[in-house]
Amino acid sequence: MPKSPAGTFSLNGKVAIVTGGAGLYGQHIAEALAGAGAHVVLAARGVDACETVARDLRQRGFGADSAELDLTSEESIVRLRDTVVARHGRIDILVNNAVARGGGTVRDTTAADWTATSTVNSLGTFLISRECGEQMIAQGSGVFVNIASIYGMVGPDFSIYGDTGMTNPAFYAYDKGGLINFTRYLAMAYAPYGIRANCISPGGLATPDQPAEFVANYTAAVPLGRLAGPEDIKGPVVFLASAASAYVTGVNLPVDGGWTAK
Image (cartoon, rainbow, N blue to C red; front, top):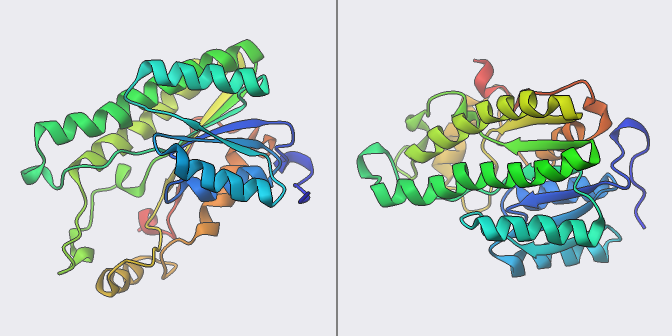
């Protein structure tokens, strides 16, 4: 069994749900929480992908399992909450990480694109926060960690995409900006119950398929001179999920190499 951290950064005995658990950030978030001692439930519509990640964590000695979650369905959200409580007795941490994607810039995003993304990113996030929040109130403790974006804080720099064909979709600014302020709302609404809510706004994460032009342009624009790597999200998540941040609530933490400090 891997040794988890002791002291204020320890999540020993905690139960965490990570939505979009097999996604770009989700798998690294799940690994970080499990490494700190939490039992992690990776939840998404793609439950097979979540189980693959959970199985790898279990083989390494961590506590993890998977569960199906459709954020467009209130019934699915309630079922996930009840399943986790039935299996593990509690929900200590909810990481709202899942994101639906669709559409492009304002000029080529349809009403259907907008409705599809907002049903997950706005309504779904609200519903799962409400339902897990009820369990946290019953326990008298809990933590929300929301994963937003630098593009919920500042407008997009379209020049970094060059001739790659990449762009920044309109829904992303709306949903991620809203998530940052929803975090503040959760912090105020749940503080009387001993429940905290904080947000992380990551910058761009390096992936193997990114065009060289984009990578060069992006890194030139970042004060620390690089895109984020898998390890960069882990420490902030554990900090905000653990007692190390016991007096921190309503905060949006940029993890962006200095992008939003300019």
